[in-house]
Image (tube, rainbow, N blue to C red; front, side, top):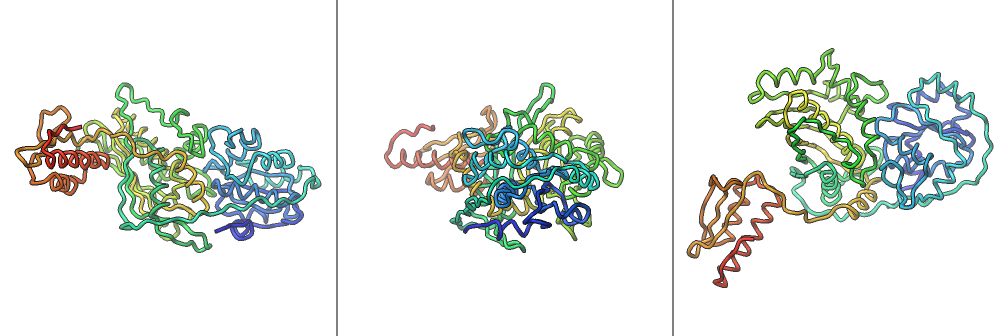
Amino acid sequence: MVHTWQSDHLKKLELANVEAGDLVLCGAFADRAPMLQALDEQRVAFVAPLESRSDLEWLLRGLHLHPNIRHLVLCGDDLRIAGEALLALWQDGLDAEGAIAGGRGRLCEEIDADAVDTLRRDVKLLDWRGRSLPGLGEGIQGLPLLAPERKPQLLPDPEIPSRKVFLSRRTSFPLYANDLGDSWLQLLNLCLRIGGEKQTAEGERLAEALNVVVTVGLPVIAEDLEVDVAQPEDFPSFFDFGAEDFERYYERFDAPGSSDDVARNDYGGRLRAREGRDQIEIVCDRLKQSLDAQSATIVIHEPGDLVNSTFAPNAISATFNVVDQSLYGSFVLRSADVYSDWPLEAMALIRLQHDVAKRLELEPGAATFIVHAAHLYERDWQRAERVLAESFRRPLPLQVDHSGVFLFGNDGGQARGMLLDHDAGTIFWEDAFDSPIDLSWYIIDAMPWLLPQHMRYVGQECASLLRAMQERECYLQG
């Protein structure tokens, strides 16, 4: 399937004087239409969204299609950090590997360094984020009128790869990851491989997995509880943003309030100023009353969001529980755009969990995300395939399972299994079966709390035990 400027992106623009206007406005704003009423529509070619990597790439294609455009104005509130990638492109272009400076990922293969450099030379980029509409109008009046210096150029359209969809139970998928980067790779893989296909009202397809439960095991730092979630070395190279971008995003996430035109991501106002009360302070006070017995929940959605969810945050609630002096976080999300939204929102919620843990002088525990609808738009299928091909390395090394360790053996012709704690001081379970196959099936069915990798190990060892028993050899557990 091939998408074009006309079929895919033109309908997302607010058009003014597209054939002769010398200026384009782009950015993250809830409603673009009122902007044109307050600006010089003769000079403005169109107003474009800039909320995702796909929006950025379509914008570049549009600038090549319309050589009359000589000024590109970045405005609004760039909560989704796509504007930072645009600024980096104009400042540094693409490097030898086709990457954007600052750990901001890459563009699609159809847009190369030469295509970017042509625009950098011919189109002036202005960072006017935060300006009011009157301020934008005054700034536009002061820009010089420049004649076109190049011809229209049609860049290759992005191709949407076809998906081979595996059969699945369609709902309830538990995922476990040691870090946020791996959780993202697993979500991309899940949506691409088994996501049911849907179509939006605008005609765009998406792959969707229902009721995904993602548990991210956070590092335990007991010394001083200083946790730097957003250090550059912690950022996977396959993310489309870097540490500086995340810090900018989190400032807005953590702020007491934010402007109306980014209400969809107005986490700060909902967390800090819900009916005049700081929910984070309330949570901390509640947990301090009884760390071991109490749980505390922050409600992020408002009642009106159920009626009009277009500009509501993805997260519904955040619940914190204390277990063995560690603070565990449980976050419920109504939906998540896995490619564009998940890494930023999940990292911000994890940072929030760390902040609460620090206030309570506790260690951070795992963070669990219950995502009712994890979806991947077709515009990002090619990007997701590339990330998985380059970075999704499996199988992972065997992880330590908190559930304990198994011992297996041949007990007079019976397959005996035993589950002990890691110090081998306590036996949790012990039983014997006629066959190692029955032993492995019992463990898998009766102990769903085991890590998937631990289940893999159980199957591997029971297969070795079966061979040893059949060939009357000594079994040595690996």
